[in-house]
Image (tube, rainbow over all chains, first blue to last red; front, side):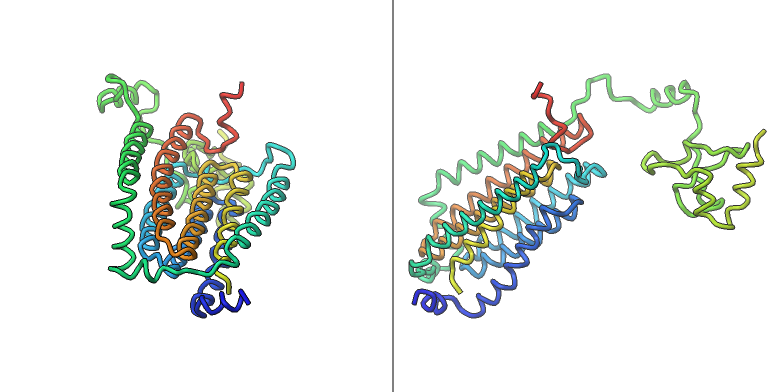
Length: 265
Length: 99
């Protein structure tokens, strides 16, 4: 009886939208947790947040839907992506388990918790008739009514959030700011003196890209035929050894091999 | 279809976020999972607002969003500071206070 009532309350379009977007939101959540790469996790989270925004729209909360898309997917996730790009290559997760069996225990507890809380909330409102927001949203629309509530009954809390936001902004600026001592900033003159005194005034050699190979991981060769290790960027993990050079280069690499083997002084 | 399916979905999303906080080791991903939990609670609040015919649930969800924005700003700044000193964003590496 209750199910037929509920079916009458929710339109077919909403049900179709729910069964399409619900699995998408769930898949995004699973992707956030399971993706090895942090950037993929962030993009999966954007997927979930977007579907939740559409859910707010169809639940008669258009103001929250717009705020969700602007604030969450537009601002917060961009902040996450900025920080991921700043942190850079370290953003991949470690596979080492610090506590033994913690992943299994956490997953098991998670399944139990999900069953408990889902059963609880499912039974909580199952038998209550759905009131709907038609009367609340009638006079001037959802935005007007939410604003009216926000600026009358919840005005003090609203002002407190403004204090919270400005504190958070100042705190983030203090944390992110790098303070240099007065004499710590080095000018052009100091830098050039340091460079001459360091014993290497000339720039580092470029990699051997166009000589024999088309990868920046190819080291340049010195006049005596030996490999110049500083010609490969630090960011490239390891310069290729002569063996690997031969393996990757094929027949086109013959002169290099001759240079490496026969060029010993 | 029953309106409490939204609540079940929000419970599932909340649980996935909680398990992510427990399982992942990258501080930024842990933070994203916290955001997922906040979003799940927002979905529940909006569903309750519609179920009970009361706009205050939407107001509560709005305040959750504001607090989440402030939390993300400060939290990411802390992660950046830790990364600058230890060159790592893993939550296992920041264990100096343990000893």
